[in-house]
Image (cartoon, rainbow, N blue to C red; front, side, top):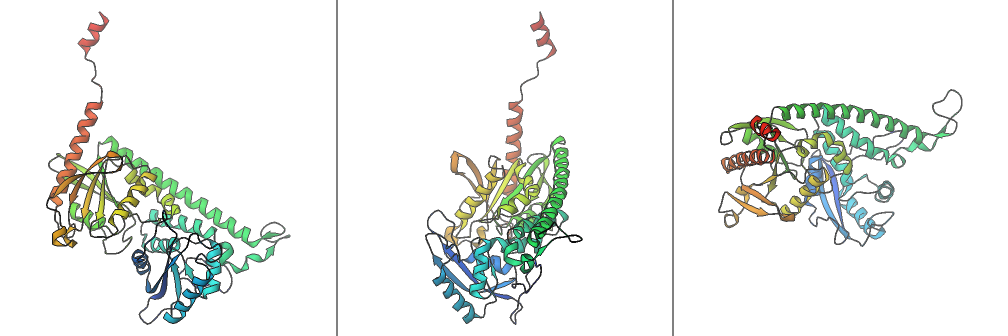
Length: 411
């Protein structure tokens, strides 16, 4: 949770808070129910997990209900007064909103509450910035942060009202400092985009090489913290980082998986997790990474069946897959964390078929990646998908006429 700057240019996403004895930033969480059709988590549990992943300590939760957001304070003056009292009573260092705030709303709330205010987008950006390890991942996060920062120059940079101009100064006569800073950010965005485009071309070359070798590509997709990395490690005996937290890994990892029943190896890729209201800028920035899913031959949609929000999480993953052009790729639904279900809720079969929206049937396999349960059934399902797709492609290729057939036609 960042402090309001005293003066001068400040990165609006830098988290340099006062901290309590435990070393965590105390934060009040706020969620606003805007009625039917708008995503809303009445428990704020997911926001709490996001806050904890960013190093914050949720100390209180506030739920507001409105027909539409207040233009100035998002929650209205009455609820804002209630939040300010709660901040004082709890000794909170900041407030985190579960929805995305406009720059003006964020500025007005900070003035009204007297503490820094963050929204869901900035929180996710903070987590991504902390977790990105590869060169590509860092570039992707930097691009998203720059694009977010560009819309908040008016809110954060107190020196922007000054004018500069004249001979020997940077900028043209009367050019506002805010315009210069916006130009600098714009130049940096173009530079990062160019470097990401180079990465995208490199990935494209690698994918074409795999296609020429006839490699079957499988990608793990799913809601964040559904257990993708744990399943990835269990299937390919890898040591990719896995933890019980949101966005534990951001960088794509690819390994080979041997399938005896198919008589061949496939590539298995672990991709970034999805989440409700994933900032669109992040979807755009991570296009190169998400292409692994968009160009896969098979998707393993990993679901946390022990989560009360599993249906909503499943729908969100399908929505993002459609957005990145992966909605038509064959899927196997992997119902993970079955060991966390109550005994009377656990499935009696290792696998079954489910009918999804649009009339599509998906193979569903019940597993516990952590306990190793159901992995053989999953490998068999993947192998069967490889065999089925190979047969379908062979049937779609027209037969090549033989020399005898051609001679007969000529006669």
